Length: 350
Image (cartoon, rainbow, N blue to C red):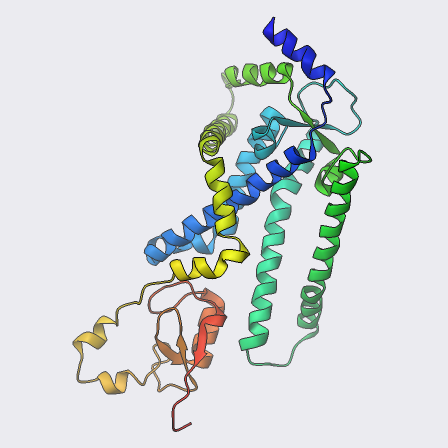
């Protein structure tokens, strides 16, 4: 009786969510990535040789985890992880009320593409843009080819494209608030879906799907491997959902703490420790004078001496610039390093 009453109540009330619900579910996933990235950064700084690859490949690893997580929820709950967390579902834009839980294959793949791949490409473009600005400030200007000029023009046009995209999002949200549009995001419009609230029947359908995983009885090896991967993704999704249910407020705090307004405070609190001097400098005291004047990379006297602010070691400018640009770390200590950490040393003779 209670389930039937809940179902009748949910159909009487408008199934379209409010703007606060849709914005809250978006902010949830925006808080997960910075928190996880900071945890990986602390782990990589504690042991660069063992965990440094996690920091260097963070975007690709996060994309893989995001694909597994979102694919599980889109397949079983017809919603992304954050949308299901707030009791929402995705339905086709052409369907009318009431609708059952489920998505078409095309809508699910478009949703997965726009949920996971688009943020990954956006993060890569923003990283390229930041690196381009650093190279303009700290690099040696050389002759550029036509492809490099086209690349620089595309990078220069990206801020305007990003501003136009943000304007589109704002206008779409404004139309959603006034009831003109049924979607609050251009991504939902491109995927051909809209958001609605879950009802009692949808919850019963999800519980029934969870009780019947559909294990292949005598399938091939490929089918069994795919079933094991789906079960692993299901377990990971359930564990992440349970942990976020308890720590959602903590994630919101982390989103505020690691925002751009508090970036200087975070850098001061999480600054790298001073690395110890190399062992060969501690043991070989006789050759300290000549060794200290040689670059650790080319083994020659310093030319245009440059120090890394992350470690304190001195190199030739051209040697350390090429190394940091390719590896993004100090060659001696392994600390994460960028081009803006290069500092020119000026001696009284110069």
